[in-house]
Structures are given as C-alpha cells and as structure tokens.
Image 1 (cartoon, rainbow, N blue to C red):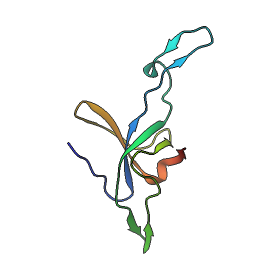
Image 2: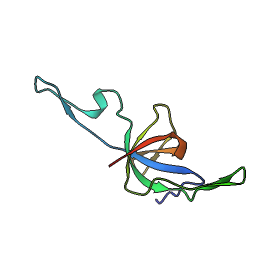
Image 3: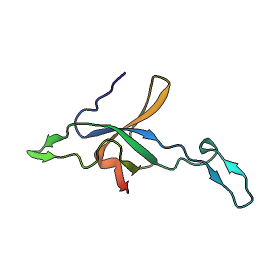
Length: 94
C-alpha cells in the first residue's frame, strides 16, 4: 500500500536500535525509551498557509529527530509508521 501525506506532513518509520550496556548486556529498542529517531519514507507536497508557501525541508531517505509527542501512529502492511507535521521534526541527521 502506498501512502502520500497531504500538506506539510511527513511519513516516518522509526529506526530500530540496539544498545549494549557497559557490562555487555544488549538492550533491544523496545526495552528502553523511544529514541525519536526515524527515517523519512514519504513527504507531502507542502502547503500555502496565510498566503505564504511552506516548502518541505526534508526528503525521502533523510534520518530525522522528531518531537516526543509528535504525530499519529498508523499500521500499514504490519509495519508501524508515524505521520507528523514538518514542524514536529527537530533536526536532520547527516
């Protein structure tokens, strides 16, 4: 199923990470607080708000940090995704 966000919204997929403690114990991503790190899957076309054009500053494939309580979780084809407004994206990781 293909999803295309509307307006200035972005479809994200959380990046799964494992972390190893100093003692060598591996912590899976579901055993700790979410890292708020995701990959951009799709990008909306942008929007015009109050007569000003809002251009999209992220592109497909970017790794980004997003706000803690941002967006709406959706499940498509047994995968979890997050739809957020571009304003909820804090940074692009290079």
